[in-house]
Length: 362
Image (tube, rainbow, N blue to C red; front, side):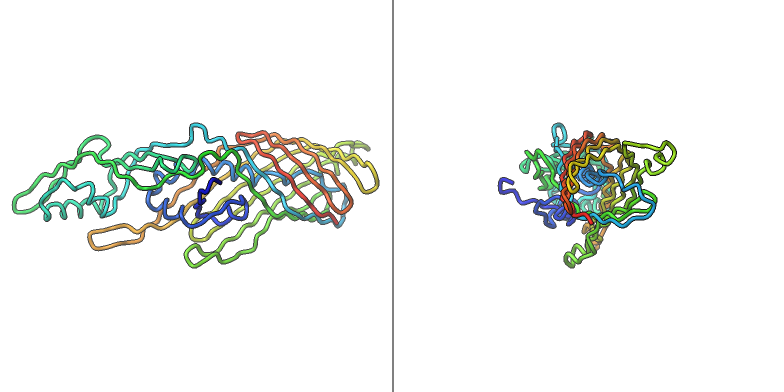
C-alpha cells in the first residue's frame, strides 16, 4: 500500500475488505460536510456493494422434501477498482464555516469590532460555496477546497450607530483533506457464510459477525446477512419426470452497522442454472451461470462541532450514497471433495468481480 495509512471510519471494511482502517475519515467528513462528503466517498461505495453481493448462490439446494445439510466457510472476493474520471469532484451548494476559516476570509477587514461582527453574522449562516478537490480515489496532495463567494464578492451590512458595508472577496479555503486510494486497481473483501437446508428444495443463508464494541468513540459494530435460495427443479421434476438442470432462485440482504457512524445495506436477487457432474462418489464438479439484480446503499451519520457566536454546538452530517451497479451476469464452478468444496466465480458487472469460497459441507 506504498506506506499510505488507510484512514476509514467504517470498521466492517477492516473485516470485509482487509485494509487497515482508522478513525481518520470521520474527521475528514466532518471537515468537508455532507455536500462534499457524498461526492468524496462515492467511488468506493460501488465496489463494496459488488463484493458483498458476490459468491452466495452457486450449487443448488438438494431436491429434497426434508433433509439436513450444513455448509459453512469463508467467501473471499475482489472487484476491479476503475477510478478513471472519478479522482476529483466539484459541487455547488452551501457550507457552514468555522471561526478559524472565517478569520482567514475576513483577514482584509482591519477594524477589529467590525470584523468580529461580520464573523458572528457568518457563523449563523449556511453560505453559498463551491467545493472541489480529490475524491477518496484521488491523490493525497490534491486536497479538498471550499470557495467562499464563488459567484463574486459577498457584501454584508454591519449595523451600528453608523451602518457599515463590508465587501468580502472570493476566498479559497483549503480543508486539508486529500484522497488515499489513488493507484488501487482492486478492492478486496471477505464474508463468513453459513447455509442450512433443506425443506422442499429450499435452504437459508446467513452471513454474521456478532455485535462487538469497537471503542467509546465509534461504538459497536455488527454485520448480518440473511437470504433464501430455492431449487425450482424440485417442482419441475415432479411435473416432467426428468430435469437434468438445477434452476435456482434466491435473494440475500446484508447490513453492516457502525452505530455512531454508518450503515451499509446491500441486497441481491438472482436466478441461475447448474449441472452437477459426479466424477467419483466423493468428487464432483458443478458449473453454473446466472443473472442477478442488486442494490447498494451507504448511509453516513457523523458529528461535527459547529462554531456559533456563543461557542460550539454539535451538528450531524448525514447523507446516503447509492451504488451504481444494478445487475450482473455470473459464471462459476464448484468443486466438491468429500466434506470440502471450493467455489470459483466471475461476475460481469459495472465493476467486475471475482470470488473464491472454501466451504465445509455436512
